[in-house]
Image (spheres, rainbow, N blue to C red):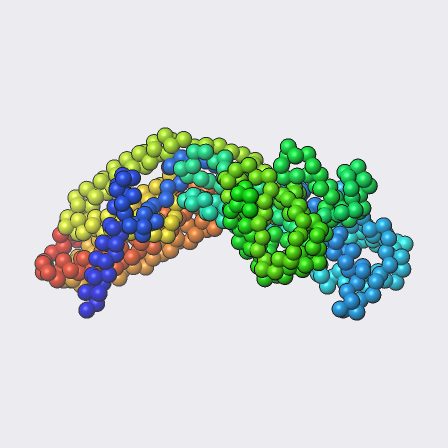
Length: 532
């Protein structure tokens, strides 16, 4: 029963591997006719094999600091005014301003006895992320600590990676590799993409949307602006019109639940939006309290539109119409809003294209190396170990099939270093088989029957095989964890190869050899054993 179960599972795994690996060798016309399951699990090729685009992005650190300082300024002002729900009193202050060049908020507290109260309020919100310098006479400097900035930057890069991935995935671009590089950079590899311009446009825009009231008291751009108001340009750069907008954000784009391209009542391209529960309540409150007034829809510091509120909108649904020139522009905006706003702009630091010809040459060279090496190994095993060598070769081929199946099934990208990992796996698999056969030689010299020789050979070789393979597996895991790009490609195939090799040599090869010994009842090993 034990043999039957192992035999059935090995046969099922073999057939499944063949079914998943063979479609990779078919031409595109045959691949298109395959069921979705097989098309979705073809082995993805890396940039060095398939060609495509390479883009290196950098998060604008200065913009992150600027945004955080602006938020800190608003929070300091709010804490000084106090919270009635918490029975906090107003702390008298003056000359609150942002010192952007030194990254500090300066404020003068009139009664120095209130400094400790203000410090406690600040600590309750920011813990140890914010520090206070007291220069005397109630003049305070509030700023983020260096560690806080490092944490903010790390979180911002991680969030940017996730948003970039969502934006690219929405386009249906497959086999994309997105990795963090250094402290503030993001590497994007796009195999098979010849023209990455649209993708650059999508991932380079912040897509930060906010909703503000329009300051109706400002009649023209030449008027003196209150400190709470700023002039923002129109989304249409040719418009030249400036809109006076209150700085206070009434609704943040973070509360957008969905956005889709559509048309407005005049048949022009527009974007339909749906807010979440919090955003719906805020939108209803904004429209209810400001009927007859204008509010501005701002995207990345530019006014998309500033319509007049006709009536309350209680369901959180709206349509954004602006100076959109095409349906594609509207579709891009809807996609960016759905995926979320980037925490800061991304700057293209490096961009290059990898030709498909280079990928084809690499694949061809990898094929030749793998095929010639495999043929040499197969012939050598037959010469030195006879029928046992043939069985070892069958297991070796199964080994390669399962590795390739795992790459396609789990979506691991095959790179040129990955092919090197496959070749190395062949050597490791053969090495394990040779250790087993040599242990059999030792046991056979003691006069044991063949079936017992097989059992003892595997038992004696087990610890050696496990030690060497586990050491290699740990090395591949470390390379995958701390490496990037080509190193990871090598680590993936090597790690999978180690696990599959242990399964094939310890379980499948033993099963085949025991099957041979029981059915052919040979009294001798099928390879030469020198007598001592």
